[in-house]
Length: 173
Image (cartoon, rainbow, N blue to C red):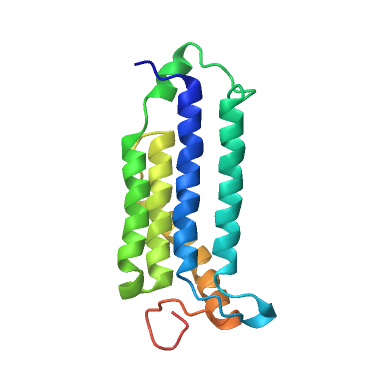
């Protein structure tokens, strides 16, 4: 059985549609009780899910009506690079998300998201260049992750009054 580009591209569209469906199921479980400005906490998940469903429909149309256009044809050594996925990078990225989900309620939003960022950055570097990272790059990634996660946590908890898991009861960590 030969798998054509049209089949692969249709599979991408179906995968995006499946993600949209899972997001819709999750959004349906979130309370729709209106808050400040008249919209509830499920508004944004529904908006993203519907947008993904529209993207999936567009991808399906493109795949079935001639394929994704203006894609460069792989030639020469690029073919070898494109066909070999970086499994180490994939494992680091997946592990980062799973680690965040596992630790967010025990060590809080800020620290779990900081670790998630550092592991994801490590995975992206592995996919790009492959060599092992130094202690300095890990510390830099942890610092950048902290500088992103802390203001996001404080904005959600202090300004938007959305409860996120914290490390302390004070609400600042």
